[in-house]
Image 1: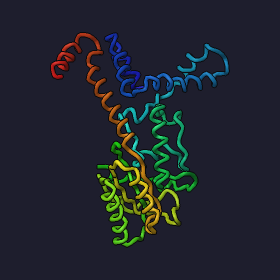
Image 2: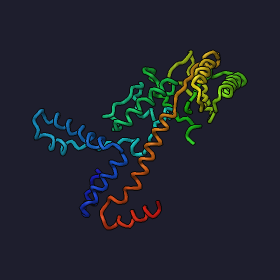
Image 3: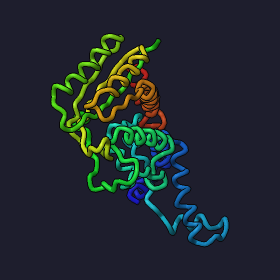
Image 4: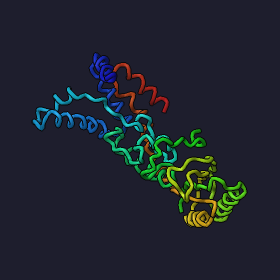
Length: 148
Length: 137
C-alpha cells in the first residue's frame, strides 16, 4: 500500500511514476517478473468471485488487493545464490525441507531456478534437510566464517 | 585447458583428534601441489549440526577449501582420498567458476544499465547528469 501511495503522490509530474516503475523493473531484471506476479492475485480474485467472466478481473483486483511480493534476491541484487548460506536458503524451504513455490515467496523465475540448485547443493552437504527430520526447531545457522 | 574453480567441503566426525584432521588436510594439500592445483581459500566452519544423520552422527566438523586447477583429475584424486579417510563422513566438490562467470556478466550488465539510467527520467533535471557521465567516461 505504502508504495502505491508514494507513487500517487509522485504522480504530479506526469512522467515520474513511470520512470520509477522502470527503475524497479531494471532492479528486478525480470521484465517478466512484474506483470506475472500481479497476475497471481488477479486470477485468484476472479475465482473467488465466481467463475463469472472476463468482467471479473478488474473488480477482483480491487477487492482482493494483496501486497505485491517482490523477489528478495532482485531487491538485494544478488547474482549468485550461495549454497553455503543455509540461513538464507532456509527461508525458502518448509520446515520439513520442501522447497517453497514461487507463488508463496514471490521469488522471480530466474532466481527461483538458481535457488533450487543452491538448495539441492546445500542438502547434499547436510546444510539443509532432504525431507522429514522435523528439526525445524534447529534452524540452520549462518556459516560464520563465510559472513565476512 | 582452462582454469576451473572448485569448492571442496568435507565433514569430519565430531570427535576426531586434531592431528588426524591435519593429516586429511595435508593429504589434500599434497595432492593439490602434485597435480598443479592451488588452494585459494581454506576455512574451518567448526562443529555444526547436520540437517540429517550422516553415519549415525548428528553433528560434524565442516572444512571448506576453494581450489583452482586446470586438471580435472585432481578432483577425482581428492574425492578418492576423502572417500578412503575414516574421519571424513561426507564430502562434496562443486564447480564454481561457471556460476561466478555468470555473476560477473550480470553484474557488468547491471552497471552498464545503471550508467545509462540517468538519461531516462524527466527531461530537465536529468539533462546535466548524462553530460557528466560522458565526461567521466
